[in-house]
Image (tube, rainbow, N blue to C red; front, side, top):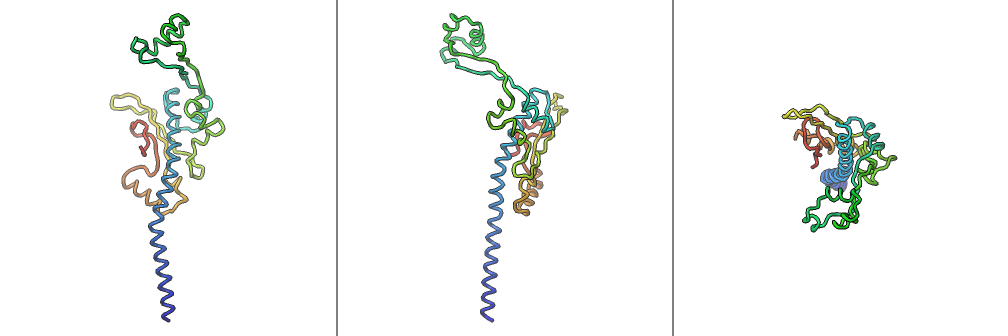
Length: 227
């Protein structure tokens, strides 16, 4: 009988020790995985912000449609200045400016160009694809559709909202946008209770339960809630 009790106590101790270990390890592992995933999601939200700001610059307002935004990225052009050479301190002190140097070079007067030391100075305006201008080689026309997808989700898209009719206190129109992903979209496969705890904490703090950039309620300089 004593042997049975000892075995039972040993098993109970092992089980309790394992439960204590798990109670400590689970939230640590949850937070570590959450942090790793959110780095990638933040990067994607920053990419969306770049796209929306460029869209507004060219179209006058934001778009709530990823299909429209992606089509814009694939098919639109952006004016850019190709720069070659720079003005030295001596040239600047002599009164040369970027604008005056460009004017001299474009005049084609070689005597004046040489006199001002502008033989290797160029400022040419060109049009390049918006996709290349914003992201370089990060995205192509074949994979840019992924910008809409929340990493680690079940293929869900970021929630994209706009407010193109917001007027500030000075009655100036200020277009707004926000893109967001809730915890439940990219933490769903982790410990369920830890996910619920994270959501509950954010709600108690009256903060968005996830990651978000921009706001359709008021201007925030298009900042992310991680910044």
